[in-house]
Image (cartoon, rainbow, N blue to C red; front, side, top):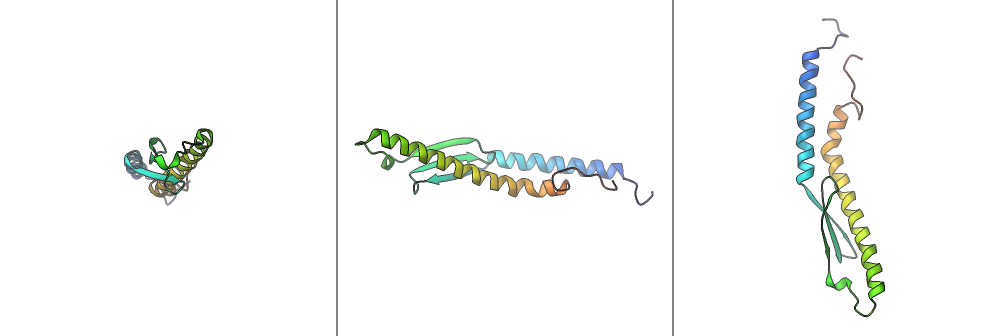
Length: 115
């Protein structure tokens, strides 16, 4: 074998291993739950590692019975902030789990050895 030749069997084995690692990481992300909060915990959003909203909790303390419109507006803002915070945390988890796999693929693009 010449130094520039590609060992196809080794390449296939590496690709299969990376595929297994990717599937495992994706399952971990799907099973993981992360939280985002807003308003000092008045609103808590829970998402899975893929960023899918699983649960939303709104504290009764967020409700002002004397001003329903202001309360509705405030809660809407807090929900948006909590969901964004949770999605940011999920994105960080994705980077943690999938980042090393992307680096193994040549920084995001698959590169064949010897090419």
